[in-house]
Length: 351
Figure 1 (cartoon, rainbow, N blue to C red):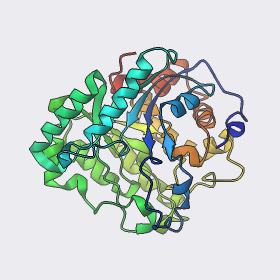
Figure 2: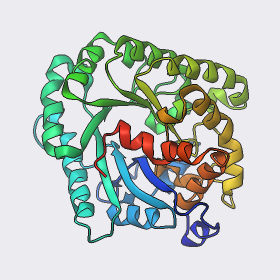
Figure 3: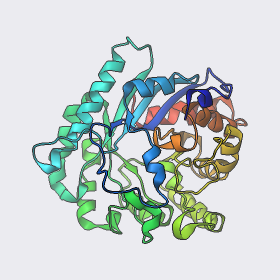
């Protein structure tokens, strides 16, 4: 996405405060992929993701016109330790991100606060032994570390996840995983959920089994429209909607409104040339966003950027314009909840 494309649209409601509760930072130039392994057919977009997205890249995006006050970093496998016990290697990511947060908190880059909250990862299948990893994250993240994300994304069709297919089925139903999961609440940690739409029944089961653990569903549950689901997104919409409504019955769960610019839903806007406008994006995403708001209420919903992943469909400025178009009929208080309030409260941010 070029600067010209980013500047193509006027910024809507430029004064509306935003807390972006989901972005990543990484440096894949320093750790290049194996050049002997070609991109998987249909997933060539992976090569178009920014190989380096660090603090100054984030600053450029949040400075593109919207009033972004703070962000929450969510794990992406960046800067894991090269040495030491395997279980503790992900703590390197928290150390790295907390350093970025300290740079931002210095104030020399302005009032914006990057990574005011940090979500790391840990292997919850360690069971009770994961407590040592959680404590190491908390120590490394200081008063910014807020939770864990361990992806459970899986589909029987390998063409759905492509290079991201790393797991077998049923992680959330595993007794060992749940033994480790039970350690989150005692440590005051939340759980970010990345699972695919057909896995929502497992998410519902997990949320019901652990009502004391605060959870957030990432990317509206990742609707599918590729691979075996190509051309079936509308057919499956009702299944997704019914599961979203069931999940909303669990008061310990909130939902992130976003991630729909990724490849998985199979929207026409993905990697379109020219890039889609915020009007087109809003039209494509609206049914999913409005269904979640109706089910969860504004105080349990938060808009997210999922950057830089969502660059494959739009710029940062265009993405937030699309969200503002979807929320145009909301009251001032409702917009506050959706764009900053829910995220600030859920992640207990000190702003």
